[in-house]
Every structure is written in C-alpha cells, then in structure tokens.
Image (cartoon, rainbow, N blue to C red; front, side, top):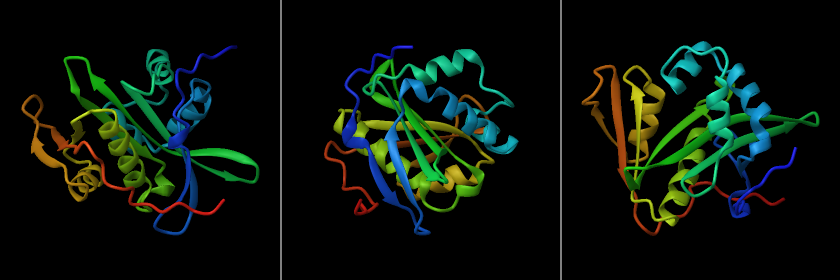
Amino acid sequence: MTYTIPRYPVHLIDVVEVADGSRLTIRPTLPQDVELQQEFFRGLSAEGRYCRFMTRLNELPEALVERFASIDYRSHLALLAEVFEDGRETMIGEARYVVDARDPATCEFAIAVADDWQARGVARTLLDRLEQHAAASGIGRMAADTLLGNRAMIGLAMRAGYAVTASCEDATLARLEKSLSPSAPPLSVRRLAA
C-alpha cells in the first residue's frame, strides 16, 4: 500500500522525559499507524475508552479508523506518544485536534493516555505540543467537551489554564476552552540527549 503524506512535520518528533524519568517518543501520527492506534485503544480500560469517546466502545468503528488516518497536519493534527521496550513499539498516548470548519480560528482537541501511564505527565506533554503547534498554525482557541466525571481531564485542563464551564448543550458534559497566544510559550519538557 502506498501512502501520500502531505508535509509531514518532522520538527514535532522528539524524545522527552516525563515526570517519573521515563523516556518516550512524541511524533505526529502517520496513516500507517492505524494498527498501532487500534491496539492502543483496545488496551485502554472500558472507563478510559468511555472517557475518550463518551460512548461505550470495545473496538474503533471503521469510519473512525479512517478519520483517524486522514490527517493533513494543518486542520487535523494527531500526535502519539510511544515507548520502545524489548524491540517492540508500544503506543502509550494519543492527542489530536481538528479545526472547526465553521470557525477556523478554533480547534477541538482530545487526549487519551494508557491506564498504566497516567499521572506521569504524558497528557500534559501531549497537550503542550498540541497547543504550541496550534498557535504556530494561527489557531486562536482550543476547546473540548469532556464528561463531568472525567476528573483527570478536567484537572489537566485547569492546570493548563483552560476555562471549565458547564456545557450548554448537555448537562453531563463540561466545556474546556483556552485562548492561545500567537507566540506559544516554550515547551514545558526538556529535550534529552540522543
């Protein structure tokens, strides 16, 4: 199978160290990462999948798999966090944004982190990267809906400076919103020597 990759943003590839000292690679997702992503989402707990998709899923529907693979790195950016152990690539986190077609200055974002990797700074690292790329791309605002019971996401958003409000459309959701400055601050993670 041949893939066409429009302007792959190699500048977003990095090896970082998270709060507990673990090293992981952050990189933009490639179309051929579909199986890696499916394995990642299968590995999430039922609660983790529910928090990410706000519906009960055991398997990603084919239409969603196709949408996840159709990225252009401008209006749809997806980053993954991965580790390499025993010669095996394992995806441990995923973050993406999609520009709102009705409001190109706004993007909707989502983040998921493997259960065993939560509370180590992976989600914050991914969110920092999304914000930096969005701001550099001229996006002025990031937003997301999350379940009111998703304390981890709400806590992450609050620590990152997002306004958290009750959703006007659904009483079970919270709305997360943040204005981005055109010149994004430096990343909060440090680059490691290769």
